[in-house]
Length: 78
Image (cartoon, rainbow, N blue to C red; front, side, top):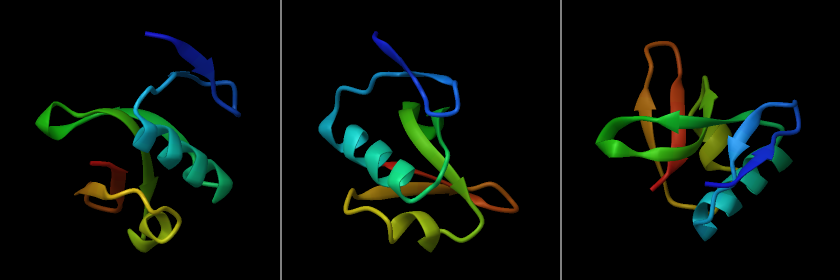
């Protein structure tokens, strides 16, 4: 797996799926911090954490899933 350095110096996998790349580009353009998430249903890939789910969903055309974390949501591509 290839890695790239995130804007804030964090090392993240270099995602190869087109929808993952578009999600990362859209979220970074919106000013949301993207991180690598290993979550439900064996998902591994980019995700953002937001208080209001529409903060992420309204910034991308990529179809997304989300998990509620109690005080917020983690949003990631399908």
